[in-house]
Amino acid sequence: MSEAAATDATTPTKIEQAGERRLAIHWADGARHEFDVRALRIACGCAQCVDEWTGAGRLDPASVPEDVHPIRIEGVGRYALQIDWSDGHSAGIYPFRRLRELADASG
Image (cartoon, rainbow, N blue to C red; front, side, top):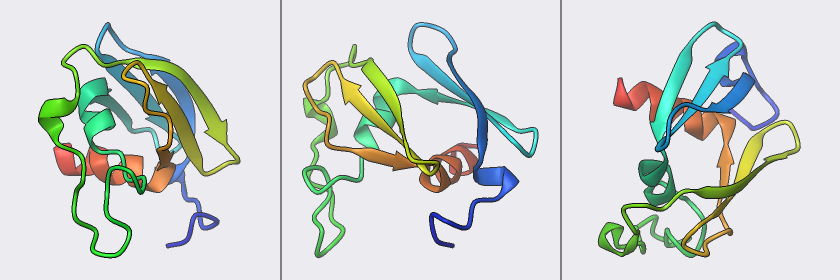
């Protein structure tokens, strides 16, 4: 599925803080998922965090502070979020499709 092929399952209708360490996304298909913000930071798929050629992780989860949190969250077109983190990282883009995959994988 390409970024352009959005479905109700990959179209957020609302994004909100859901507690001190949680980010909630409401999807157009009626689902609602909460994400631990540190887990989102660790799941970053940018070239600094994941090797572009092999797909191997470059980010050591132990290097991510326990209290890491979003400083700023902005939409990227109609397909992703860009998050600036309190640990100084801001290169990652979180496509809605990837966020839904993470949510569905976590139960």
